[in-house]
Image 1 (tube, rainbow, N blue to C red):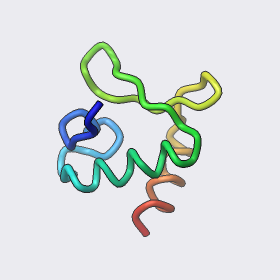
Image 2 (image 1 turned 135 degrees about the horizontal axis):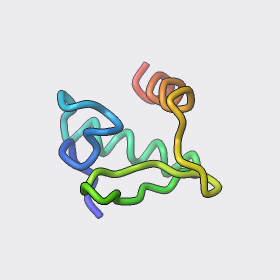
Image 3 (image 1 turned 120 degrees about the horizontal axis):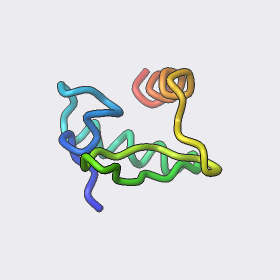
Length: 66
């Protein structure tokens, strides 16, 4: 699956670029997360069967982009 700004909007917001979406997707996958398509076509991140929490998201976005 291609990781785009459109299908990663839930994880990155609607101002993200395709480049940022691809970078964050690769970062998450490298950290052991899986990206699954939700009913609305948006990707959601899971690890060990658990959906990413807001706290995890804040930490991971910071690590990836700062």
